[in-house]
Every structure is written in structure tokens, then in C-alpha cells.
Image 1 (cartoon, rainbow, N blue to C red):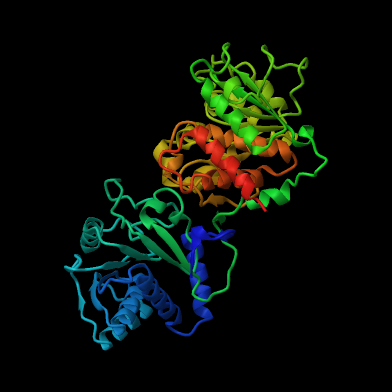
Image 2 (image 1 turned 90 degrees about the vertical axis):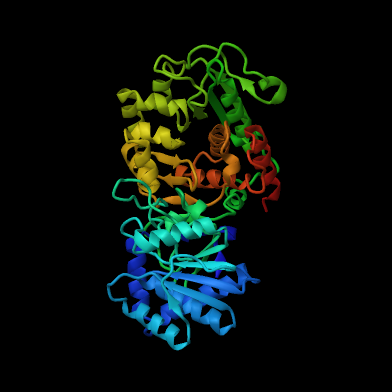
Length: 510
């Protein structure tokens, strides 16, 4: 058993359909009830670890195999001398065979099985084993009542496999008949079994799952059908990808041109430029869209180089640089970015497009056509939208983007034929022909103004040093690094401080 997000590496993710296929294959290779026996024992062991002083435990079991796992856990805890209260919140339908076995063995062990949807007095731990993978609709009746009671109890909660009510593919609550989000358990710990589900790591998943543990129940690892979870330590790949010879010089590490910073929005471009410098680019040029010098840019970061005023043209060659475009570029097609954007899309070899650059593309069919043609022309692009910017590009309602973040990122990548980082809790990295990557690093400390500008600049700074690195891989490393820098930070983390946190992680590279 491992705590997933404290591990280093990449882990396969499975859709609900993929989970069922993996479970079916495992059942063929295991004796009857063996998987449920292992699952219940794992849940009991984790219960003892996360609530060692709890003497009274309430196990809320549902009508399927998730409830069977809970019944097995309850039996083990009772055998260890704990006071175990079990509520079996089942319908009139017959139980699956393994769940029926779990119920029979629990009764034979002397457990009293009740039906109350409320925890008993003096309870020290709640085990949520009500609804697992098979969730089809919002919880109703006693199941809904139990979820409400659990969330209002203030007690520590361990969910088995997934918090009851959470959709495993999306990280969202199942909508009820009125289209409103249904009830979802808010757990402090979740023990994910057999296969990792993407919904635990994106959308509302992290808020409901708490600390996420994983036990493969002794089954072999197989490729996932929903991409890869990026746990931590991705920045450690960077040193092997971009080793610096002793005889190198600033020209060895590329140049970044940051275009942005309309009037009253100059700080966004300064943050992106500072991040590109901290990432290690050899030179960073700033071309502000404001006539005035960005406030503090020279005093705070004198290493920045001001790009000549006027249009982008051949007099000051820029076509070999890595461009970061759109940070604080202003609103409307008449904003300062409207004039250079077509040439940027036609010629920039490596382009990170963020913020108002994305909004400009969403409003212009011509710009969208230029963006769609870049990969075929040998030009590389990374888009870094937040959910609202993604909704504008897709012409979807914002709620539709957040209802299935993996689908939204994949669709946007396919439509615009480029790499996409859909930011948010569990940022999703999608590229044509590549498996989805779901980032596991980051905290709510990143929920502040300017942190997205820092990410865009950091990606540009890394890309300048490794210009041949595929954008999908580069985005994965950069996004994970950005999130890892927030760990341990106080909320909120100011964007300028984030740059220094990210830069400090350079010193920890092997």
C-alpha cells in the first residue's frame, strides 16, 4: 500500500470501463472472494493506521461490492477487539455473490448489521463503503441521508475505493434529476483499490478524497486507458534532459521573447519574463504592449532585456526564439496583440500562448486557422488555458468544461492540433497522439493572481534550453515543477514569491 501523491513517478489511470475490465481479468486469476478478502483486509489495516486511537468505528456499507469490502473490514476490526457498528444500506435487489459472502461471514462472526444512516455516539472513525465504481446517478434515500450525516459529523472518514457519490472518471458529483450536484462524501482518506481513477485527482476529487492511498491487491500492473498520473519528482528529470557542460555560455541556453503587458497589466508580462529567467533561459527579452516601461522590471530584474519598440519584423530577428505571448495582453481584437499575433502564429518555432492571447484566438476564425496549421508546418505550440479560457476556445459552457476536464483538454488539443495544459485542480496535459497526463502536484496556494503567468514564462524558459524537446513532455515537467513549488507554502502564495520557490528547487536537482 502506498500514499500515491508522495511517490515519485507516473502511474496508469483507468476509466470506469477500464477498471471493470481490469477487475474482471483479476477475478479470473483469483480464487472466489479472494479480491474482496484482500480489499477488506487492506481497509482494516489502513483504518488502524489513520485512526489508531479510535475504539468505536461505524462502517456504512452500500448494496454492492464496495459494501462487501466494508463488511470484510468490519469483521477484521471486530476480531481485533474494536467496537464496530455496521449499517447495511441496501435496496431490495439481491446482493452480488461476493458481497453476499461478505455479509454471511460478517454475521457468522457475530457482527450486528443495522440500517441506520447515522453514526453512533462516541464514534472515532467512519468507514465509507457505500458507493464505489458503479455509481450511475446521484445518491438517494438512505444513502443520501448517510452522506449528509457523515459530512456533518466532524469525524475522520476513510472512503473505500472512492468517496461515495463521486464520479470516478471526472471528479464531479453525479447530478440529480434537477441537474444539481448530488451528495458526495468528504473524506480525510481514500483507499483506492486495484486501479487508480482519474476522478480522485482532478475536478472536486482532491477536496473529497483527502489523502489518497493505493493497493493493487496483488494484481499485476497494466497500461491505463485514461492516461498517466504524474505524482511528484518530475523536475528531477530535468537535469538529465538539460545537463549544463562546464564550457557552456548564455548562448547555449536559448532566448525567450515575452510579448504582453498592455497598459495597467504590465505586471503579468514581468512575471512571465522573470519566470523564464529563473528557469534558466540564456537571454529573456520583454516586448511590452504598453508604451511605458513595466513598473519595477528594470529595478527588480535588471537581467531582462527590453525588445525594440515597433512591429515584429526582420530588422530584429525573432523567428528563432521561444515566444511567450498573451500574458496581460489586454482585451478585445483592437488590443495591442492583435497586430503581431498573425505573424507570431505563422512563424514562431516554439510558442507558449496564454491568457489574452488565447482570448484573441477564441474571437478570431483567422487566428484559429493559423493555430490549427502550425503543427503541420513544423511549428510547436503549448496553450495554457484556465477553464474559462478553454470554454471560450471550445465554445462550450464553463460548466461543461469542468464537468469532464479530461474530455475538454483532449478535445481542445485535437481541435487546435497542439499541446494543451488545462489548468486547475489536477491540471490536464493533452497533445495529439499522446496519452493524457494528469498532474498531481500543487495546492490551493497557487490560487492567486499571476501564478498562471509564472507557469507560461517557466515553460518558455525550459523550452529555450531544450528546443527539440516534445511539447507534451516539456509541459508535463513544467506543470509538475510549478505545482511542487507550492507544497508547504502559506496560502495564498504571491506570484513573485512562486518564481523564487521554483528557482530554489533547481538546487535540489541531482
